[in-house]
Length: 169
Image 1: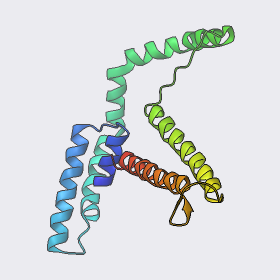
Image 2: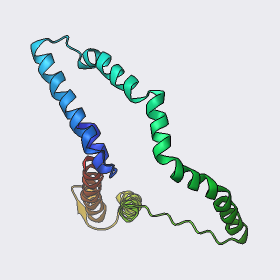
Image 3: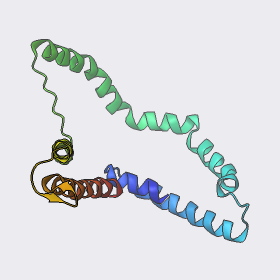
């Protein structure tokens, strides 16, 4: 349940308050039931009651009442659909339709990709330096090559922490 709530928060999905309260109540009933009887299944116990409520809500009379209440609005929408479709197709033919897509987080993805490319370049450069026999040596390895790998390790650590932080939030 916590995973579902975290995923909903991450994707900016909101649920009606009544649904959340109902889910919370069922969760508490199931938790209490399992403490008393490990084989307890709240869904199986509530299923007959849920089916009764669903049958009551989805009766043809309720559907007819809904149609009666919304007939004028439905008629208005149905009446305007052909005109709306025609206008949309005309604008499409004329090239007047613009689609705007916004993706939140694209900048962070670009930054992470840039760091990954820099890391790849540093790995290649440090590896090439490690194969040389010139320059200052540190523990029998070229100093610049070792320094490059230290920088790579630090940047890679920051990149991994940043990726994991985004997945958790």
